[in-house]
Length: 350
Image: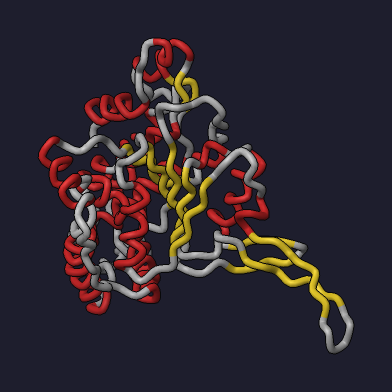
């Protein structure tokens, strides 16, 4: 009688695959950007006194390809800061003063009818508007009607302008930095939520300290204007912006960014009680994406090719505060969206 054959079960063992090593060129680029970061700060501080946190967030937005909304009273050097950055990085710069009578064509450009004197033919020629620059300052963006505000939407999202049935590419790198006055709201048009969501950051620009203001007065009332050195070229900036996308992010960091964004939504099970009491609508998925991109940029500006929880937490307020729509009760009590985000950081665990 033949012996019964024993069942033989084979277990497939998945071989360990080590993560691909970071190319040396990327590590060298991170070190280069860390050095450039220090040089850029040195050049900016020749003209801008204080506002270090604002400058840092501006640089994070630049290398993360994030448009930024600056909120502050007049006279806090918002325009000077952005024009100084453009000069330091050798980028073209245009300032657009938004007014109630500003038309979309005043931003994007317009077509003019020209006659060729040789042939007698008439043709349309597109004349580019001020949006065709590397850095565009939309000054007091909420002073123009929504139709004109919307002229920036395609530019901010697609880096293109469509006019007369033709699409024109914008110069790269391209960023929109907008300003808004928080105290004078008569005759203004609040930015639609869809456009607010296009801005990576809302940066609050506060008053300088007493010693900083004294130094500002000395500098701005003299005839000395410091000369700036060029630090990076536009082409190199674009390469470093691509580098930001290649920075690895651990799963627990992604989970933390998503948890922060989801906790701002009053209908979410993870939303704390104070969110349900004060917020009508929370941040959408674009917020968590921007949190990670901004954290990547912050990491490599500090010379690190890895993102930490602290990078996400440090940028949560400028990334989330303009995406929260407060209810009437919160507005009546004077609650600010930024303070809600700060409180959220204390209750959402990494």
